[in-house]
Length: 172
Image 1 (cartoon, helix red, strand yellow):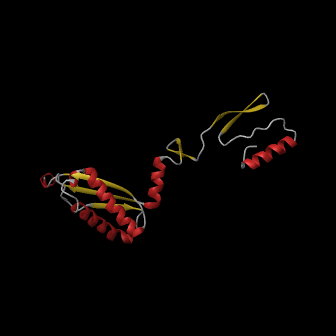
Image 2: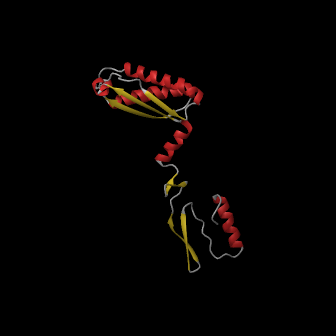
Image 3: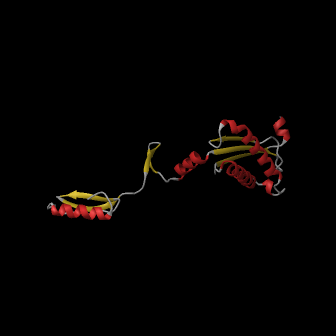
């Protein structure tokens, strides 16, 4: 017996014995059965789970990168690029793009709102907090996720790019 629930496996084994099969082995999922000299025995165990073919390799369907890809599929992505001075003041209007969050007819208004949300988030940061790229990134990520969740009930993957430059560097 090699398929079904435990009850089915037992019934298959009973049927086989009733048909005068001399040996039955009831394996657990993943058991490797080797047949030698008319005898079957469990000789090992194979990995279990759902696997797929990706980039020439067999990978677990629950791998981190496939989980991330599924999240993007169902929740979309939003990317923001922010240019701030070394002291944390915005130099340019934040540039925001999205994929899979809203329809084309909603995109312009949403992206404008997202840009304003970023400006407000940075403006409301303390003078000390805005010096840390990690803190700026976390603040912007939180603001964008909040906006998307309230408007579309989605939890997108968020990518933030922060460039520290002052006005002299940009005008050169």
